[in-house]
Image (cartoon, rainbow, N blue to C red; front, side):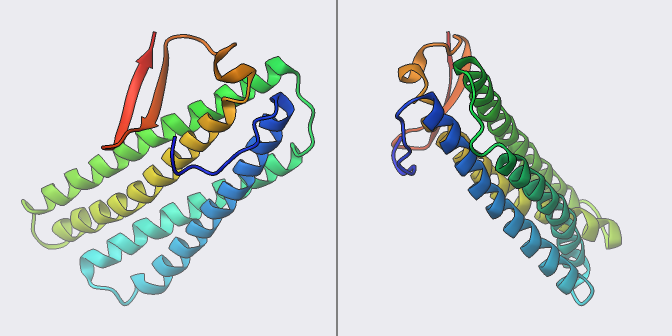
Length: 192
């Protein structure tokens, strides 16, 4: 897959170490995004217009959650640095990591769909009800959009790194849902 960072593919131990480095780096990004959202959301929500106030509140809430998740993820991966895993443990951990980011990518689409729904509903409402729907909808679109990119890139990066296990296929079950980049966009496919 083009555009992903070059990763060491020497063997299972290298895959494990690279996986932890990727997680630590990505959790720093998530922590930074969370801190930025919290600070901006708190700082701007009180002086913002009615619907913008709800957008900033959404950013604050998501920011605090992302800040906490980023820190927990970083410290969990940091504890695993240098940990030696058997081939089976490594394959299990790799599958779990890929699955988490793929599921999260799908949930991010749900956030964006929910945001669009709220924005569309705001057109049928008035007053504070309209402001809440519009503001929360925008907030969900912003957060879902960032997280969709973040989780999608993490999935693709971990998937590429995992190909270092047994030549990229042995030990991997059939019937897997995979995502990849094509010349025109993102492709989801079920391998039977």
